Image (cartoon, rainbow, N blue to C red; front, side, top):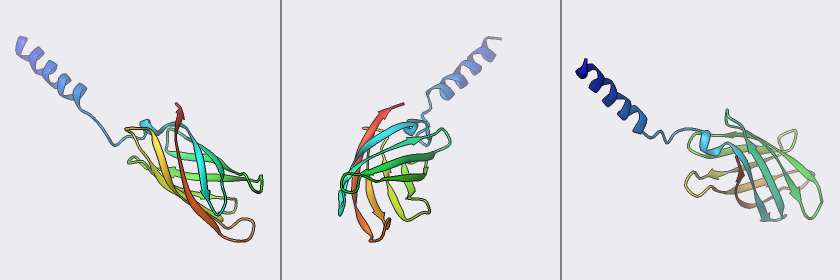
Length: 125
């Protein structure tokens, strides 16, 4: 009986102490920041439990809001579109360690293509 208990306890320790770095859970929540380039403003997204991303970009110049929709991978790669229909891209990386985010954006709404970079951080779970 002691051997069985010791075996189960040892197995529990290995399972309980293992680290699974490839999960989406560190990214779930609200992220926000600013963007700049040919246009500037702020952005915010919400990452759901399935990795789906929804949010908006707000332009300081045009006062327009642009819809962001996409997915974040288990490694933190963000791949999203801007506008409806999809007229631009919002791509980058979310980090587990420091809860920071950065990337690039392009947008062809309303007429001319605009582009630049963005950065931000996780603001809540």
